[in-house]
Amino acid sequence: MENTLNIAIEELKLNRSNWKLVKFGDIAIQQKQSVDRDYTELTKYVKGEHMGSEDLHLREWGELTDEYLGPAFIRKFEAGDILYGSRRTYLRKVVIAPFEGITSNTTFVIKANEKKIDKRLLPFIMLSEGFAINSIKNSKGSVNPYINWKDISNYEFPLPPKDQQAQLAELLWAMDEVIEKEMEVLEILKSSSQIFFENAVENIDGKLIPLSRILIPKNSKSHVPHERKKYIGLEHIESGNLECISFSDTSEVLAQCNIIEPRDLCYSKLRPYLDKAFIANFEAISTTELLIYDTHKASKEYVLFHLHSRPFLHFVTGKAFGTKMPRVSHKIIGEFEIKVPEDESIIISKMSLFVSSQKLIKSKIASSKALQKSLINQIF
Image: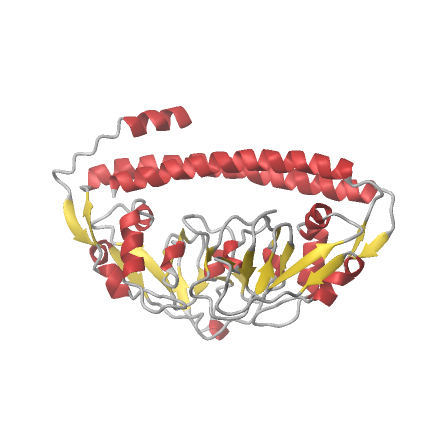
């Protein structure tokens, strides 16, 4: 498949002589159907945090019984609709809904005007650099910038005739299939590493020790303006990852923040089911929703594997308090007990092999995504 794709990409010679300049509003239709949540059979909802950056696939969502949703969650979407995050458009959140559900009125729900465009092509147009630049340039506000529909609607770009649209859509979706296959391999590796770790911990000798006797909270706060240039918000932390490589500039961060040093163990106390924990590899400041720890009696790596384990996720999710924004505390985290062996090295070394394998497949996924992005921008 990959060789076939590479040949197809190399042979891609676009003749734009019969392409027509169109406005986005000509080929996309905004949906504004509202839902009364007290009288609906819909059960699923999608928040902005459920949507990944530059990822057309919705991999997370919520059930209406999970938590309190504010009054903004009234917008209905159907399977096949495109959901577009109108806040902080630099995050480039464009996903295709795999089911019908509810989202907030700050997420645009979009259908293709199939009289003018092959609907399979529309999401890739929205992932193009031109579309993103237009949205960023026309966003309003500084702290939480947003885009209006009319500004998206007026975006102009060249569109090929329908027969070429179909060919391009097939090529782009074939490339997406390659990426999804690689993602499946990554998920298998993650699942295998979880099973190994849980079984290894179950079979070691050692007493159960509460995390309160292992974790040492660090409470250093930053001053405003911030001396450090890197800011880590919850949106920068990928669920299930052992490290954080994303950040933003601190110039617009006006609140006091936590200070992160290299090798700090970091855990998000907000919505613990999102599984956001990592060991820092650079100095930064972070949202105060991120708890910062040192450790004793156990290595940070060993504790981090526990923080990502299914037993821990089940524990903290069940203990979380608050309906609108469920969260956990130092106290709740400290109640979870782990076995600490005299020698962690065997478990750590074997888990490191899983981590290395995951990094290799992640690198491959990143290369495939870069190629896909390049191809999208060659076309649009």
